[in-house]
Image (cartoon, rainbow, N blue to C red):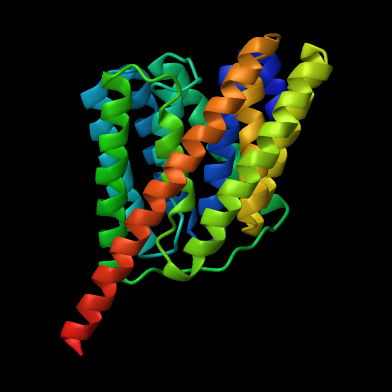
Length: 292
């Protein structure tokens, strides 16, 4: 939390959000990767974040980056599920999302956050289990999620739907590559978003701006913490207030508007994720029947 507060003072809210997400990436890849592998994965995240900043809200460019990041995530899921799960989210937040940085600033803050996350993980000796995903399952999941999220982003940006990217974020965060994790993450995403939206609304309504910023930074800390522990409901509970508070600081009316949008788009994203999960399960069952 302390590095994120310092970055917030030095570079503003966008830099703090980008740095915090990159810390999460560094903390996710370090326990299950060799130092060179972890460094490469952070560099990939920085490259995607920089290209997303260049793409901005250009529909076709964001759609392409979404698919590429999902495919890269699928490739690393063969080693351990979720290694690059944050990179498609970073594409959204650094592109059409609330993080407003030049491409070079995005690259630098992501690299700095990734290094900070790796150092914290090493110093505190955080550990995480390796959860390899079967090769075919990893590719099927990655391609399906990539195509769906690319289509969602293209549609929302082409039609100028405010914060429509939250639908894609929901799909990315809730639809896990391992089938036995999907029910928990889908339920956690829905419940965590509702509770997190209420926390954000109360913070915007009743706290001064500096107080709301403290709540947002605390949520960023808990997001990284629970990302390490795997408690997805708590991850969603921490992510939602962080995003909503940073996006509506000092504007109560905007806080109401964003809270309603967040809940609606989360429900839509959950519905899309459930549909894809059912299709993937049916495909897997059919494949197993044919091979048997």
